[in-house]
Length: 354
Image 1 (cartoon, helix red, strand yellow):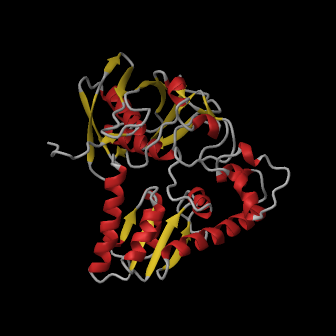
Image 2 (cartoon, one colour):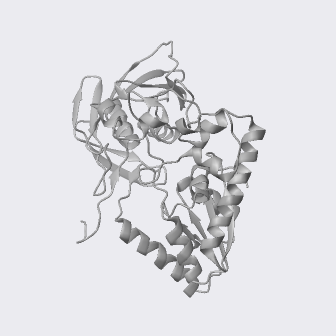
Image 3 (cartoon, one colour):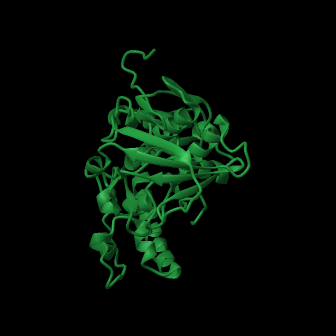
């Protein structure tokens, strides 16, 4: 039962897809439990079903985004090929899942995203969760079996217009997302207060060092690279970078590790206090303000560092990334005062770049 004032968690579109697939495969009628990537299970109600498919309504909890309430439907059928360019092929036990985005699921049309051009916008995390749960449900026990799993989102194309997908070059619908499977809602003010309290607590308990991370991937990477940090010494900050850095300085911590990826790095270099995508979109044209020459590139049309990387040689992109890194480190150090900033830059796979 929820306590008064507590915000209710929800689940991602990736969890909705997984739940619908498992329910369709097991012919469930009411509810389905799925395994979560971080451990534990999640019980999800079934909205409707038909002979070869199931629909689940995505529930974003008490802090929903525009996809909350959308219907994610999955149909299953035996498959003997061929796959299309947009399909994702996922090993699953001794079998194979061919995951296909149908109506309302976007398709990648521009380079630089986590998925290649032409693919359905169904990210790797949800696909891994799907394969794990389908294997747990029994698919793949028979060697060589193949299954086509088609995912659709009712009204997905219209919903996508209210997201960043059009500006990112994802057309025709929403993306199937969700690294953890759970949507954890928060009040901005409450979340910021929690960050401040965590950093104070670290210092009050004798800690001299803490780390700030922006999500699950950077948290895992920082935990790997800084084993001397106790678990409570790693503070997930989402988009609240300046509040967190200033709180660490006020707590008189000696060293602050800031783990991030290229998109956040660029926003730090721009001096943005809050890096949320809807509040402060990534404007690569600001690279010119940094004195970085990129003549001939349509920077005004680009909204991801990945797209920039796709237009440059690896060597030139690395030069730019190094320049942005130094500017970001200077901005963070100015905010941090006497607290020493260690800026840890990672790629999308958690590999250390700087």
